[in-house]
Image (tube, rainbow, N blue to C red; front, side, top):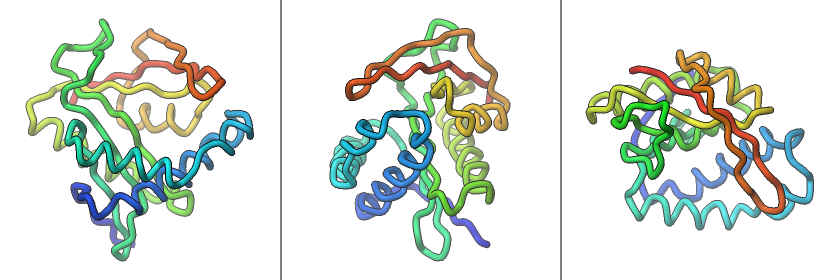
Length: 172
């Protein structure tokens, strides 16, 4: 299977939203209440990606197999809030989503390496990201790229629930 990594473009919005929606539901079906997940729509994901890609505040790379987007990583070279444990030149990994049928096939590894290269070329030497405390896939991803927990946790309100997250950080 050949996987192509490239920068996302506006025309990718619906495909990106589809991957994000499917992956989010798959990853969270055991972690969040069903009523929370039922309130999320594919259209709302597409709307958020429209805003994100047109605002050009973050960078997004996509993974394609046979010209179909099967994964994405979104990161910020200028995070709004850098945890005190992190270097001030750190970039933040915001999202990594893989289409469920492509889990454990090397897509996230290729995306993470491409994002690290992009971030490194932009001058950052450190990355950080937040993983849901009970999301073993997310935590395994950060460990696989050499990230360690930063000793910081936070609780983030999300649609009538609270998401408990742990900080991961790594040198590039």
